[in-house]
Amino acid sequence: MTESNESVLPIPQRSTDQLEAFLHEQQTAYDALKSQDLKLDLTRGKPSPAQLDLSDALLSLPDGVKDSTGVDTRNYGGLAGIADLREMFAELLRIEPEQIVAGGNSSLVMMREVITYLWLKGGVDSERPWSPQQPGEKVRFICPVPGYDRHFTLLEWFGIDTVTVPMHDDGPDIAAVETLVADDPSIKGIWLVPTYANPSGSIVSQEIAARLAAMPTAARDFKIFWDNAYAFHHLSEDEAKSADILTLAAASGHPHRPIMFASTSKITYAGAGVGFLAGSLATVKWYTSHLGKGAIGPDKLNQLRHAQFFGSPQGVRDHMDRHREIISPKFAEVERVLSERLGGLGVATWTQPTGGYFVSLDVLDGTASRVVALAKEAGIALTPAGASFPNGDDPRDRNIRLAPTFPELSDVSAAMEAVATCVLLAAADPLRSRA
Ligand SMILES: Cc1ncc(COP(=O)(O)O)c(C=O)c1O
Image (tube, rainbow, N blue to C red; front, side, top):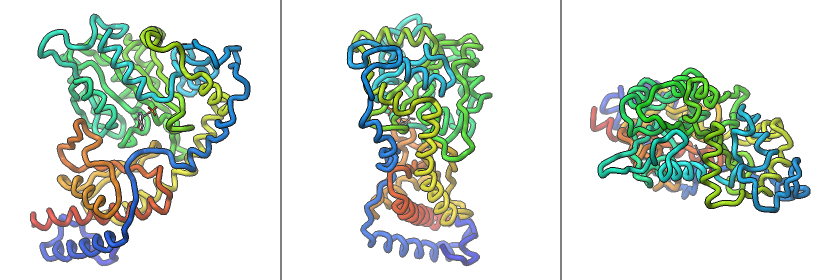
């Protein structure tokens, strides 16, 4: 970064000559970047090997094969999961153990199962299955954007239309949501990541959660998919507490509206953790009765080793502190580079998450795809522009999701320096032609 006065003048306000010079500077920086033959990756939000190592005691567990109620975890049965782990995560999620199911290794699979059951059979409060019964009938889902790409892919795969609303710091644009659901019975649900959202880091406030729980909906079987994948993934001591959606919904007379999901994918092992689903007692019964048509029980041995590994809800919290020690310096580095290189220049804004796995970067409208392409050419893999929008289509072509957890800290620095150069180079060209 230069220290001249020019560098603090927002780029959009510069004269044509200044922009020419700026473009030249960025092109030189970019050429230098390309000559470094980098091979860096900021794409998927995965735990790093050092984070996975934190859970390696799992590899020599369980100690014995029976859970604390005497269930032999090697055998069939126990569709809702073992009591020890249900109790532990119920306490962490502030619900009752009867309201939670401990399943297989993926909460995303549980989400797909829930949509499948709704589609084929309808929910506990449905008059009929969700699948269209007449030609031309549609099912729609509200998706706050930017959001999680796999939620969108799943909806697209079912042929469910997505209706986007903006995601703000305290949750979805609630007035827009209330208006959409009030009169349109084809709008059957909303997908939310309530705590440290992917990718915005937003946290749904208690007030917005209460409005979601209480709002009148034309579809009587409207569902809130409350994907609390990052419930315990704090990056600072300022730990967000997720809104208590199940209690709020029950108190508003809509006990079956929310279905909560969580998992240990980013607590223990991303490929060998435990997924959870929670809801009203009727929802749990509904889920397990459909699940039971194709399963006799989950991998209870894996559940037992998780229960023994954590020991208690506090054991989970302590374990998350160790994750934080590893990943918070990486997020600090993203913030440092972005603010040093792009701060005050008027070409980008970005989130400063207090938890979760992502930073959401908004660049100048119409330049995100070019930033990603420039980065790719220089050896830095970024998540495709638009990935955080349904159909991969960001109407403003400005959003880029950054995932700094997996690479080493030094690689995060190098990759972010490169990203900053690409953002500036991509911004300079259109601004120059606009000048
Ligand atoms: C919001 C969100 N939900 C769910 C998942 C996947 O969860 P699981 O590993 O439990 O299937 C992810 C993974 O990135 C995620 O970001």
